[in-house]
Length: 137
Image 1 (cartoon, rainbow, N blue to C red):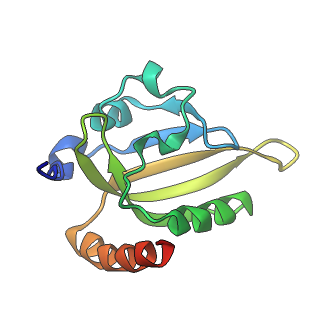
Image 2 (cartoon, rainbow, N blue to C red):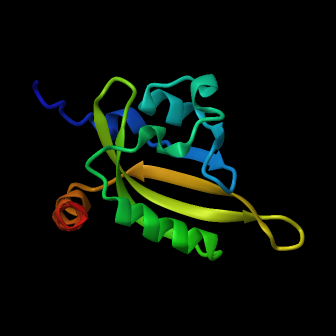
């Protein structure tokens, strides 16, 4: 089977940012129009699904374990992520995930903003992720 090519992120994003919100378990509660468009899902298909519905199999589990540790600890996380579209194509994003707090300071969910990752950052992180994936085998 032929491996799908990446999509043209710059063209698809058109200067907009992907926004999504989840509950504390990572279940999608909101997806903006650009997220739906780029991921190839409708808002109804995404809402109520675990955010990892778009996780590409090339992404190491350890990268997400570190991300969860950071955001559950109340800090923002920044990283480069390879996501999988509904149609099997993929796209790379620079991601910022931040906790959302209630009036008492409790974490009630998370908000993520994503934009196209630069070719330089993608090339650098591919090597790191490859090493991480090899350690997971």
